[in-house]
Length: 218
Image (cartoon, rainbow, N blue to C red; front, side, top):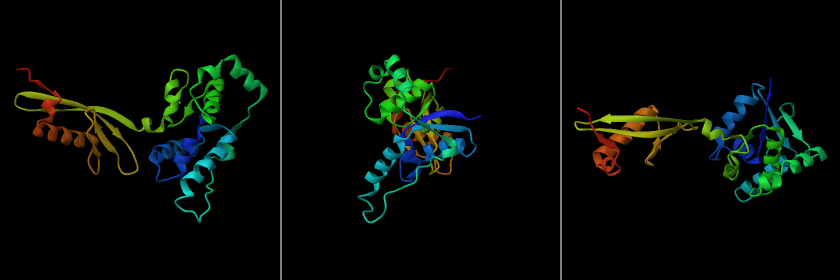
């Protein structure tokens, strides 16, 4: 059975453009669900025009002699074109959504209202929606590819511990420590990379400066 998802235009643009910072996470999320017919993408017709306008801005300066048109990665069999009807507008009014989502601009307001009225998740990477994480069920594809853990290194007199986040991407992924240090995973595991970063911090004295170490219990 297909699950309904509201989708905003920023995700469409990221799926299509391989140089986009959110491309890998959005493309993977979309393909995993769309190719297995697990999703029904609920979108207003406006999204196709917003998507093309985004593409035009992206390409008209880079390639002025080329067509800016890019086909949107939505297939009609997996899409539900959502119509702004009297019933929908009445529901938006009854739920006071114009006031609830008063900080959203343009089409973002429409996407949020569709998701709220239909009680379905909104797939986006637009940070403007973060203000409404209590009113909406937000799905951020990049967050689905994030994994958190901790590493510990023991020295003669101290135990050093730091948390880290692993983010999968098209280049093999990155590891970022809670203290801010970040590097690519390369051919190693995320845990090995995190341990290596922590070891460098211990050797340089930064780990003690950041108070990551605690005396070992005897």
